[in-house]
Structures are given as structure tokens and as C-alpha cells.
Length: 481
Image (cartoon, rainbow, N blue to C red; front, side):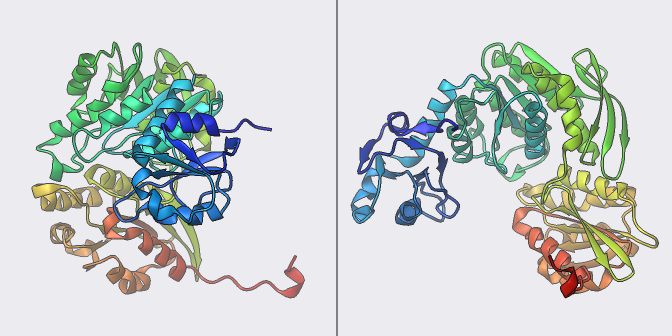
């Protein structure tokens, strides 16, 4: 039988709370979502922007949770709650305290990932590579903010040999308190790009905010930086100022310690030869895209820096596949052939948009098929937003895209910059594009959908998949199992 994640006494001591009611022997997990919590877990009643977890304590207890961590000032309103409670002054602070206790008891080698683009994909890639060498703990989805990072830490089992955390921000000062909880042995900065410019003076200010990740790296730890990024000198300087003595560059640059030598980009994968810290490595990356090739160099540099097995880690990257919203592909049977939908709908900025457009350019169409880009607004770009949208026209032309559909007021600038033959359709919202898009998609086409989360491009992907595919015939009685 596996060890519990926490004993009740250890969890109570770590949170600094006082127990009320029954005292279960152990706690199997930690959750802040009463909808998905499982029996035996601890429910932390976090107060969010839209919901207060205290409103769901009774529901969580009715589902068999081990205990609920609640705020002292909310206790009177929970008088009717039946079950085990741990009462604290502040629930989020209690979760942070539990995260600190999880880090203190762990012997895992830990990596933290930040950057303007590619954080989640790099985090997942690194977790896959390290898992070939030992038990790995990593965050679900992104979970990279003020509650996601401590929640992921609090869930880290003592048995983990490695752990990987994603740390994000959209304002200065957000990364530092999180990385000081994580205290990584290696910190990766994927790239710096004009993201969240609405909240920063310039891209250099974004670089400085990302460099907060260096403040939590343990002594003798490493900073792994994009050597091809023009902000590399600034980041290397900031890493040194934070006391990091080992800086590893990755990319094509001649001075990169994790250096790309050759790369063959294919529709569904990439084949790579690289030199990682003086070791020649050839490997296959199971997900396509030049941007993923770049970040795979950072991943293997981190494996080596953490003392992992580089050969096993490189081999494991062949098992990678694109995730929902981040390059997942739907191959839809239609009358007369097949349509491919590339789902890049999870958020967008100029750098990630160009990467997705390049990915569409790599995709093979069917006979008479076209490459169709369906793009929604990129948000939080500040005064330069219109120009950054218009600038995508060159990338679309270079990628050989045949038709472009745009949604949102900011994409009007791109629409005006596009040559007339590329203009497929436009709408104020993503759903406005549906009628024209459904009529336009034909056998052999490859359709790529991308935009910021607020643009609601994800539901458009689901609508395309649901409407374009030819319904399969129901099985005959003799075919039923």
C-alpha cells in the first residue's frame, strides 16, 4: 500500500491550523476544487476572484473528503458543516505553508520553467524526459500562478526523484515569491517576447520580470537561457547578479552549451542532432514544430544539469504528442476525403502566433487542399497591438497560407494588411466565423485555429470538429459487441 501524501497531524502542523471534529489518520491529496475532489483528500477553501471555496465546504465534506481547511472568520457560517475541519487565519497562506513543508521534506531535484512562450510545453517535455530516469512530479495543466504553484508543491510526494514547476506572471514581482517556495536546482527561461506589454514599459522590462526566477535557485544551481534570444546578455547578467554561477545557453548560437547541429522538420515530428554539454545526442521529438525543437535543447540541458540520464531522456522525447490547445490535431473524415484541424487555441502572442503559422506551413495538405488560418485577437499588447497584428501578414505569406479568417477588433489590422486573395472572412467574434468557415472547409484542407483565451477560439475548434466531420454510421446489430 502506498504511503499517504500527508498524515493529518503533519498537514495540521504545516498549515499552522487547529483541528475541529474528527481527525483522520491520513490525507491522500490536496485540492481547491470541490467539483473534482476525491474521497480522502483535503479541501482548501480558497477565496478566488469569482468564487469563495467556503461556499462549497459542505459539498466537499459530503463527498468524503478527509478534511477541509477553512478560514477563522468564515467558521460561524459553517456551523452546520459535518466533518473534519482545520481552521486557519488565511487559507491561501496555509496552502503556501504546506507547500513550504513539502519542499523542505523533499530530496527531489527540481526545475522551474518560465518565459514568454512555451512554458507549459517545455514543462511537460522535461517531465517526460526525467520520468525515464525516476519518479517525477509536475503541475497539471499550467498551474503557474499564486495558487497553482503552491498547490502543485503541496501535492508533491516524498518519493519524487524529480519535480518540474511552471511559473508565470503578467506583472512585475509575481515570480519571486513563487520561485522562493519552489527553490529549484535549475531554472529555464524559454524566450522573451512582447507579451503582457500592456503592463510593462518595454520587452527589457519583461526580461527583468522573468529574471526574478533566478532569485530562488539554490546555491550551485543553474540558469538555462535561450542563447538565440537578443535578451540573452541581459538575462545572463541578471543570473550572475543573483549569485548563479552556472549559466547554460541553448539554441543554434555557436557558443550555446546545448547546441542544435541539424534538424529535420516533419509534419508530425522532428529529427534532431545536438550537442548537449559536450555530449553528442541524436533524438526524435514526437510533436512537430521548430519552436519545440528549440525548447527540447533546454529540456535536455536541464536533464543533464539535474543529474538525470541524458540518453534515456532524449529517447523519451519521441513519445511526446501535442496537447489540446497546443498543437493537437484532429483528422476528420469528410465526404470525399479528410480535413485536418490543428488546435492551437490556448492563448496567443506574436511569438506563439508566428510559431503556429509556421507549423501550419509545414502541414501537408491533401489533393487540392488549402492551408487555412483562423486567428483571433492577441490581448494585453498595449499601444503597439494593431501593428503587431498587422505584422502577421508577412508570416502568413511566407508559410504559404492560402486563406485567412480573423475574429475580433484587433484582427482588423491584419485583415487590412492581407493581400485580397488571402482574405477568407472576418467577424467580431469567433462564433461569427462559423457559417462561412463551415461552408469553405473542403477535403484536403488543413485548418489551424489560434487566438488569446479571451477570443474564445477553443469553442470554435470544437464547433469545427462537431460540424465538419461526416457522422459515422451506427453499427449494425451483428457488429455490436
